[in-house]
Image (cartoon, rainbow, N blue to C red; front, side, top):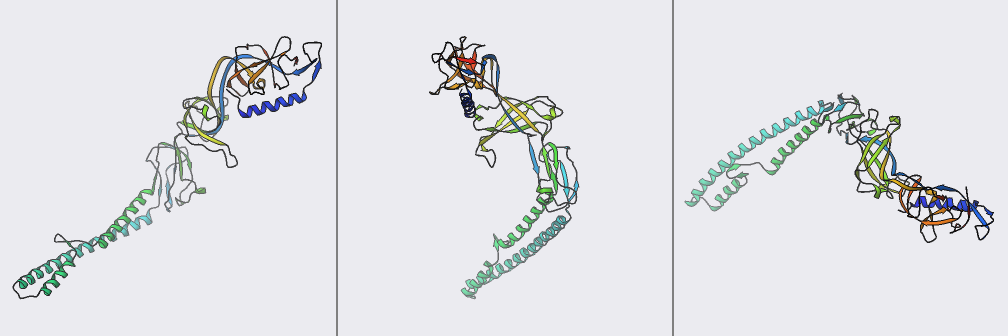
Length: 394
């Protein structure tokens, strides 16, 4: 495993500082040039390592809805307050329906009037058709007897055809049908609006915000916020933003430790439950991309509540009883090979190639058959160190 770019840059800068500040001392032997360089050292240790990613975020409910209303009617009754538990469909508030009820009554009257008028129209139309048909049959007989002209017969037929009839029965025109349809649609819209005057919850949960009060219009809430926010806070989650450089390490099912100031040192368990399929900008001023990752809190704690900042430690991997060194011990040759600089018993340098394993904030796992626990290694090695060179450990 290669060191991250940021860590490589940091170690390179530290190494350069050490070279600039280094001193060489004359020795009686062990160095063909007669000099030894001061080096800071540490030791290879065998221990357990956990590779983790630590992130902060706000705890929130696993399900959340914002209850809004576009109705410009006053709130006449509030039936819940913050902290109340509600069920799906439960009534939260009532709005003033006086004006809407008046409009519905007017529309109902208009619909009744239209229907009565159309009934009269159909009766008159049917009567006119029946009379026209009788007249047509009469003229037709006279025409066949030679007592009426073809023109007279055609005129009666034309008058009869102007009447809206289907299969001998009077019908309404398209315009007349549309008039009733429009009125019925208006009545349906008013019925829907009346239903919206009873504001109800869409989920089971807890009312976490109430942004309205009796006397205010439902569509004019404080700060244009939703009338109510309802969350399922029986199960909490965190939406953490993982860097695109680390997202490949994250998998659904990884264990998470969650801490918060409110817990007074206690730790609760969590799990990575979902990874967003798309990334987003970290913030408006940064070109860094991040991917939302959802962590579900799987352990209940009486002090843990939604809306507070919590810290999530995602466990990526672990290694038991493995060889470790501080990050500062990792060097890189001009050829790009990853190495550590071992200080032999005679205070000379031996350069050993290593593979890197797990990384933590301070330590890194090293893999090499040549290394054992307790070996002394150089910290912040510089490229001036060479194989066999004498050094003075500090």
